[in-house]
Image (cartoon, rainbow, N blue to C red; front, side):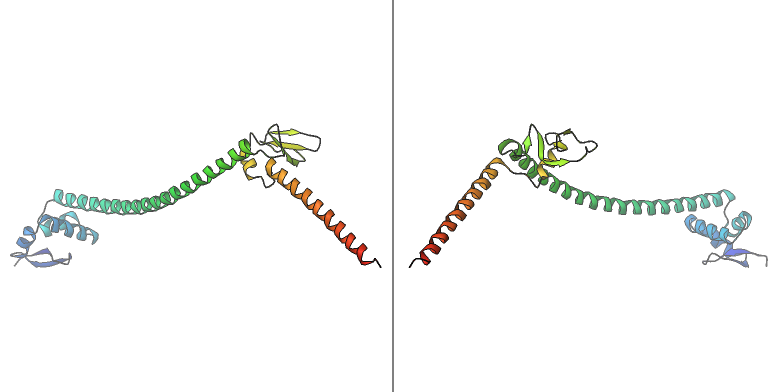
Length: 208
């Protein structure tokens, strides 16, 4: 009996009889044949050997190989899409955090504006003269800052640099300065009265 090559379920070629096995290969669905074509090509089989084993034409072999190549491309695209989805998820999480940060910044800005309005409009600082703060003096001008030269050094235009005015630790409104002045005066008067009382007590203690 004439012998010929045949492809088993494992995808390897074997030599079998011609009668039934060739017919079985011919009856395989195209997708199964395409899978076997790929396996046989990986084993180094030629188009002619594959065509004889699977009872398909060289054109179908090329079609099967193109289909497998497209499957590889699809799998690669799926992987890339998956990685993009993961990155998008991380971006969404970062954006959610950024939105929360923006809300905090907006609240901070609101309070900052409130403080600025209070400092500029309601209770200006006693160090503020014509828009310039004379409470702080620089030895030399700072690049990018609006400053003017005075006898003691350079002072900053806080009208142009409002954020510095808002954060100034030496901000002293006139009402607070007046309160401090009155408190100091009261303390001095109290100290004077205490000294007078102590002196009077001492004098009375030495009387016969």
